[in-house]
Length: 233
Image 1 (cartoon, rainbow, N blue to C red):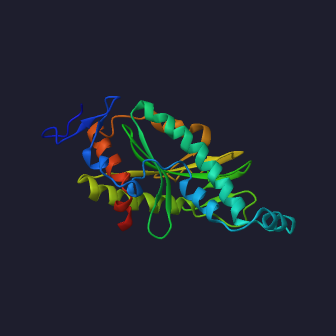
Image 2: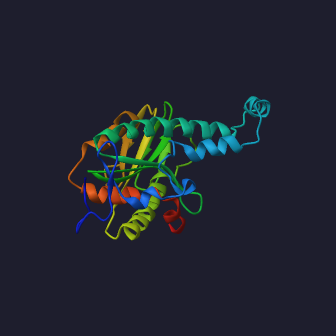
Image 3: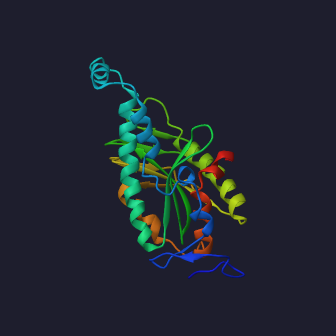
């Protein structure tokens, strides 16, 4: 059983031998984000949509782009990347999906493990040519630049503040953009603080190590899965 510095501090081991902080064992179910599936917030949005199939079909026939279609593409992207990240748990990583921040921002996936902490945004880009700059993204078939770089950078900065406060030690959250289904992705060489990947490479995030001690990784996961800590992000 792993111990915190200075003693056991009440940590218990599960059947698989992994140590769990008792603090996480007593989270009310509504406050525990660990059971979240990839795309949980998008699933809820689609479930709550009052637009019927006929209305959606009519909108498409009229050349409109129903919001629900975009939500479904985004959900498929989050499921693709989330599944790849969930497979890393066998190697000592943890993932928390669909963390809602004040203002309706969402961190699609927070990956925590030996290689550090990554805030991962999954973006649907079916057969698109993608150009990633220092602050925004240009995607074929999209008229305007998309603020994906600014958004993930800002969300990860907020996450770092929340986790640092909750853990009592510095937690750096590295921003990651993953484009799903893209034909080609080009990244400006000057972009250094945001990691850009195509979806087949999402699992390579689990290759790193030596950044976060297992005890600290456990603590970060304990704090990150508590919905209430994110209310002040």
